[in-house]
Length: 206
Image (cartoon, rainbow, N blue to C red; front, side, top):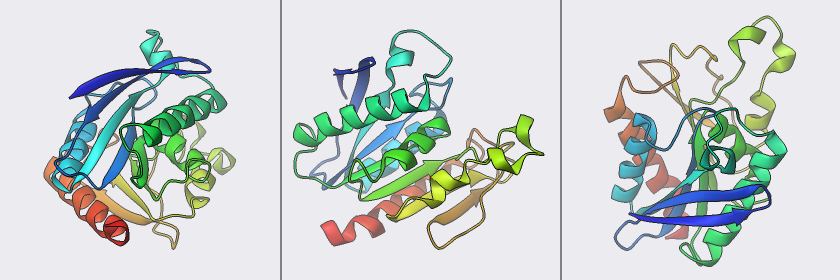
């Protein structure tokens, strides 16, 4: 593992590179709003991606690097993410197709920035469809962020996720696992599903 700091307009972001032997693509993974890079789902997907021949960069947003738990505004998260992606596309992942991904808040960032960052695909872990406090207000749904993504997208969701489960749609594939928003209930299936999907969607780039 290699760790690097990348300056962004909103402070330094921290990146962990987990290289795959002869990797043919790069996967950027972001954390949840109040979490870090060591959650079980991120660790599992990182290993699955490496086994699939994909380098992984775990991206820690500037607000977390600064020791804050409350997330920065969406525009700041997106700008920092795109700055990191651009830097990595010129260094670690030079010339390789990029997959954007993350868990919860990180999945939202990946969706919102996919077009601007020229992502080849998007991997969403526990996409937070609707905050529980807004359960009776569909207008607060984050689904438009997901359905706006134009590249191949996989959503892996726990069947008991308190943020809800998105419906299957033409714009994305959906895998529903036993468990909740943490996606820790069936790590074996999580790893297998993400690894198989990465192999399939990246085959045209091989």
